[in-house]
Image (cartoon, rainbow, N blue to C red; front, side):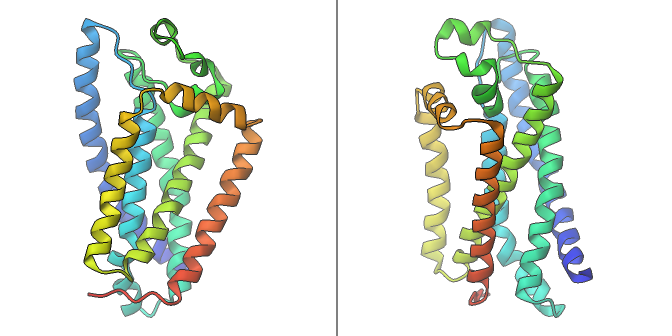
Length: 241
């Protein structure tokens, strides 16, 4: 257990440094849009959720290879390494969920920036027309605040778990294959930004989700399957220096 916590602590410290840089860049970008928002209504749907989701996937995919040799040199087994990374997911996701919530609330003072939670579970799901989008006011109730943080926490845990799989696979691939993975992440971001009917898509997701409880169960099952996959893949992983 001590070795598991040692790996978790190492990963958390490394992630804190990355998060500081990430939020510095994000703050500059959002300040730019907030300044423009003084001259007219601007809508940035799920901007924090998407950027944080992609950031965590990228960080998780790089976690395995960068820390693999450290664990091996300290006589830490592969399963212990994965357990430590899994343990670190919880505090990392909690920190980013709370920080993202604070940033999003501050940004909404100047521009319209509904989160994924807003667009699925609160009044943000009605943003199908231009007029409704610009008249939208973010829900400030206690239930919405708690729900938004918990939803982001679950979403970010899922993102990190998703990122671990290509991270383990990339260790067993050539440089060309690793370049292909990087291209896939960039292409995914470009495709999302190119979609014009994001609100219609999120509305359909809402129709498929009966309640917050069903979403939580779906996340739990998906994350468990991804983590189990990591344990299976890591047994034969051979990272090339």
